[in-house]
Image (cartoon, rainbow, N blue to C red):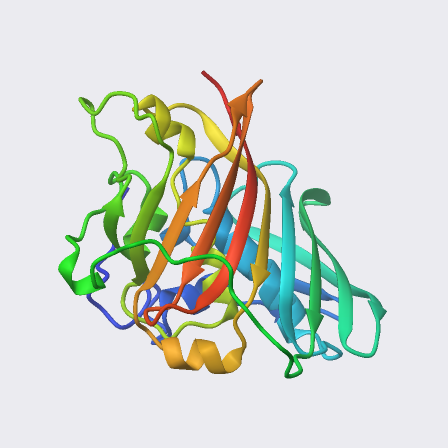
Length: 282
């Protein structure tokens, strides 16, 4: 697999746009139907990076002519493998209320559904607010050493990762009593944060079972949910600065584990929370 030159401000196709935007690009076929193509820069061990698939599904709703407001939540179910090549997305509004809009989304390839999703979009209004979650202790992003995932995980080359705790285990690491990973992360080349990019970041964590067992083993996300707490103004304030991301599991067993994560802005604002169900073997 050829290494990408992430020092460029263009994607591998030379279009002059950021590689992320090329990866989530869609063409409208009719009122509810879009076509897209997997991007080699976001390849994973099997099929594309789940975060880029989730971001593409979100982008389909964002492009829909009747979309209301901004994303509030997204749940993606990975039903089967997505092969390299073209795919089709159907995004339909199920119901529109005064302040929320509910969506059903399907991604298919050659007539077979590989991914389903539901999303809630809506409008914000000013209310009382409080954040009970507390951002993890971490040095400033520039003070944390930059590390990377193994070379064969192509999609990770599109992210600058600075682990604070729970880095990907090495051959001699051994088992870990805790599954928590915390890192500073952002797109590379740097790109201003938007909802699609925030969606992809929610899946940037390597499987928690790798850290607990201290070794690689077959694993893959079955279901991913993202709750968006940020609005457009919070994303604009964040711009292209690193996001503080932390995740841990609560239980491993019977072939599955869960994962809960938080994504914090560089100035301590909770941008999103995320939950996963992950399959593993071993």
